Image 1: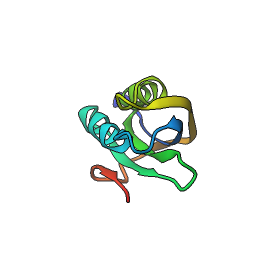
Image 2 (image 1 turned 90 degrees about the vertical axis):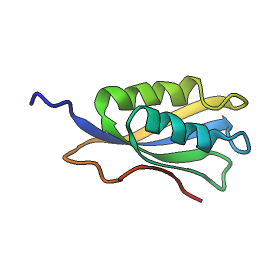
Image 3 (image 1 turned 30 degrees about the horizontal axis):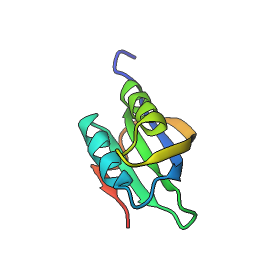
Image 4 (image 1 turned 45 degrees about the horizontal axis):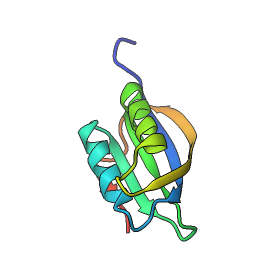
Length: 98
């Protein structure tokens, strides 16, 4: 298969990630990389969501979520699970879910 695999992965970010524009920056970074998916705050004080796109771009985004985040965030841990190859993207854009 010459076309790069499209993958989907769920993520959850732990640390000081709420009230620091983390979702806005995540959405902007996802769009910049051409990814689709979503991001939302959880009741547990984490940020979670899903990324979908070409494997290489998703990996770039995972690194960003692991180490960068928004300017005033403090990331303690990033968990990624349910990674799978998808035939086509299941989202049309990158959304912030309330």
